[in-house]
Length: 165
Ligand code: ZN
Picture 1 (tube, rainbow, N blue to C red):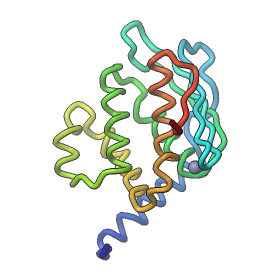
Picture 2 (picture 1 turned 90 degrees about the vertical axis):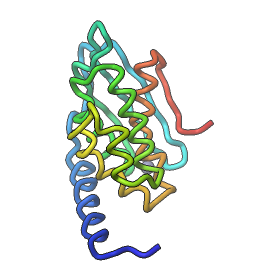
Picture 3 (picture 1 turned 180 degrees about the vertical axis):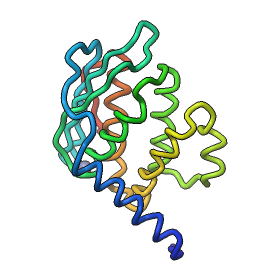
Picture 4 (picture 1 turned 45 degrees about the vertical axis):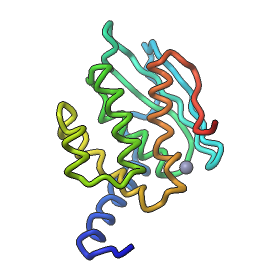
């Protein structure tokens, strides 16, 4: 694959965003008044993430925090997730979980991606596009996806999630 100069600029910007969140995670800790909690594991890399959330009557995310140990990508992804989904309605959160899996794995063009997910998720999705830098490292997909799968399991009422099986 040929990486143009412009792409290199974008990649290093993405790396900066990921490193920044990895070093100074946002919303680390536990939501005291949570009504949803799930623990996620990625045995491949050793990442562990616990998500706690306070959900409203209709499943909207009122508050969300994470606690965990893992590589910079898993921590950065968890940190970005807590900022991106706060205040969203339940169906938009699920849509965003799908969108992130696609963003980190598939080679959809930006135009295609934004026409599918830009509606409603708008600038929040743009903010998450730094995670698409993970596409360069397919082995790290599970690291990036772990917090999101853990959140999904939390929303589904399950107390644990794993990237295996
Ligand atoms: Zn990892």
